[in-house]
Length: 206
Image (cartoon, rainbow, N blue to C red; front, side):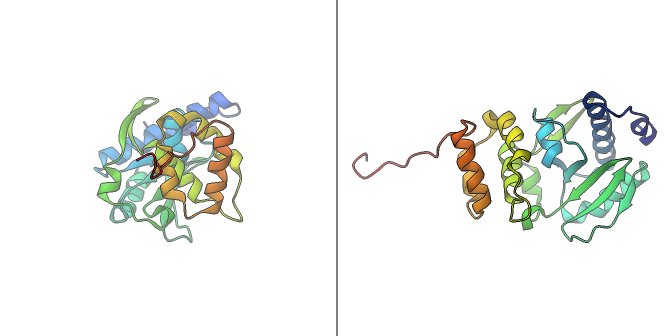
């Protein structure tokens, strides 16, 4: 698939946008595979691949830091436009109106080969792509919350769609450092999206 095919995708409605998303995903996945770069879909792209709502403006690709520039160069050769962000934990490339975030240190945790080994191959549109586990995707979404970014409506649809794939105790363990994430988990329990934490047995129960 070429960048021209992506650019030619109609825009305007949800179905048209999803078609453009799938074409962009196919271009990115195919390009990185052909370049021999190990990666996994993360963020909104990963959530979409696992049955969640379509991401609307960017695609997150997770890989090791030593592969970041090679990945961006490969995408540029495929027709994308490189961008140098001020952040030091990712690099970027544009595919028309779509932004491809090439992430190597999400939430200050470096991506390693062991991290990428957690990914599972999932069919997304016309391609099969490695996708991070649902528990990792939800935990990552929760950990970016803070005093200036705390919109639960961004995460609720994803949590609802992926809830049966998520190990919620694992998520709780990962995000316990964040009061914003804990507040979301309290809400999700009240809404019946996530189950309550596993109750530890008392001494009498032992």
